[in-house]
Image (cartoon, rainbow, N blue to C red; front, side, top):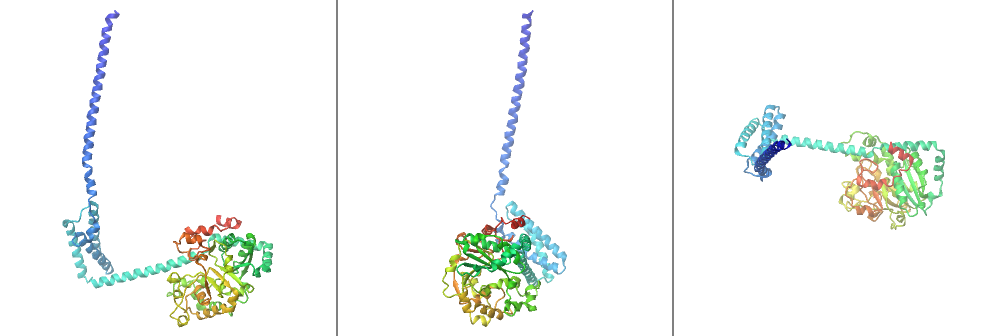
Length: 531
């Protein structure tokens, strides 16, 4: 019985294999048909693909069309320009309907330009004619309403004048804001001032030390190197001192004479008397200590007692619109800025002194300046006349005969900031009296506008000794393109200009040259900057 069942099982298995084979053949046929359909679809896409690319890359230049005298684009552009002028005139005359119609056609014209640029084809006659006809009718209508060329020119001239006045007003306002930003005391410096002031009044030993320093024989020792700084900015003065000491071969031979105002005296004294500074010596004085400096002696103080001068510099309003804002800056008449003309009176026992502005950074040893031969001159300074705008005629009023009869308009200017003063020659030439004379002659600002440099040019005229330009490089407070090689070779870098390094508006590429000499380890400074 087993042998009779074997042929039936064999036939059943054969049928299974036949069914599986049919399924496989069907699947293969479907795969071939689907793959063939994808190939045909892909071929169709590839055939259609290049057409928009050809359109997009056609060579068409709308600018050339606008410049061509024979193109419809040029005609439309000319009509559109004239229509814009008539829109302004129509609005001024209250004809809002005409202004709206003109504006509508101007928008149609602009839309046509956009379409032409997008499709890459020039504007055709059929497209341009309706707009040209409409604009022509509207322009004729405007002319019929007496919006003629003369009226157009007059109106546009008035608009141009109004825009110019607005631009001038914006320029003046920008200068005022820039000046305010340059003069504003940063919060960190105000914080430091308060903390140093508190230390002064709470530390009796510090006050005794200040009195001891005033009696030191080092202050009058002519064998030492004496520097003077007139400033109300503690941090700025500290950078001048730090940089000078850091680059001095013998810092223990340096003496710094610092003069400030009564408001900042305690803070300045606290900062400098409470530190060693590599053995150098300090004297801090206040303007109020100089009893001889009064209105009967100083023409500047006498002039500032007049109501007219007070209104000019300190009113806070533009009472003198014809004068530029920068000329009415109160800082130019602050007595602290004019103390440079009284150096022999402040230090009568010294023979030579180097004056440093509070916005300089020293990069080399300055003691060789004390060995220079000034050839009998009073003031050694770097000349600044390589550019024409630094000559005398740019600072002084040569239409005044008092100036034109005594000075050469092409004479070379020079810079305050690093100055070597021979005080013996100063007294011999009676330079302070010369300064007083010119200050009196300029009581009504007829010789120069304001500032200390014009007064210095007149006072030291004929008494100048030129320094090598590498001793003093200016402009880091406004010039963004000073050569790096000049900066590296300079003995002193001067941040002249409004963008002082202690302000947020400082020139970032130069700021590190100043901040490297800020003593951030001092506790008060660290606390104020962090808060």
